[in-house]
Length: 259
Image (cartoon, rainbow, N blue to C red; front, side):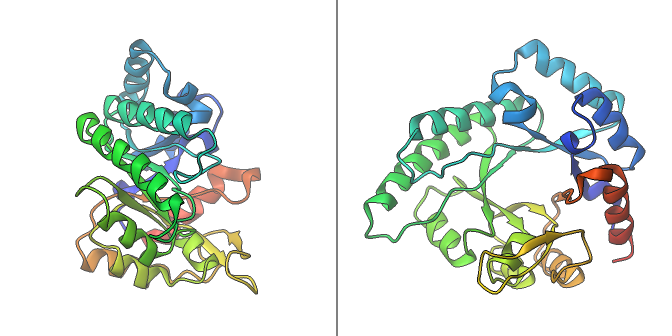
């Protein structure tokens, strides 16, 4: 696996982004993910700040692979929904400014189509789909907590290209899904991948994350399914044990090189 296709969460390496970018370069990767809420002032960063970030990235030979915009609630949750939508729009605008077309977030539980919550979710995501088209970046729903079948049902109800998918392999295992099968099923909408690992619990949704290679994710099969269907995007890694983030990421990168 080419390191050029691997991206890592910058914030796991250092709280100071300039230092984080330097450490990312030493790992041999070309892409980083940034957390909009934790690292970019919720998307309120100034144009000057964007230019400074792009300079630091260029100095280290890096690009932004994706922005993360984690929210507590989903897009069918009416509590603080308007603030959630406005924050997502800021993240989409910022993504374009930083040179990426991907903003990741969970969308929350996907309701049945005869539920009032379904109407709420469609209204929010249609609004964001229109904004995405103008911004040049796409919201990508995390497949894991949301099942592949539900995600496809949701995407089919939205304007074409209005919602993408981030394949989260570890979360898929935890929620009782086969990541390789999900990669095949969702191939048409996958825009980003988090190559994470996990072991399932007794009940769906009750597993735990593990260091890459120590869980139940069949890495080779998942990568094979993605490659067969023409995926050429980023493979994002996660840190499970924060005591040595750099060492954990280096080990994961080395493991991928053998696949």
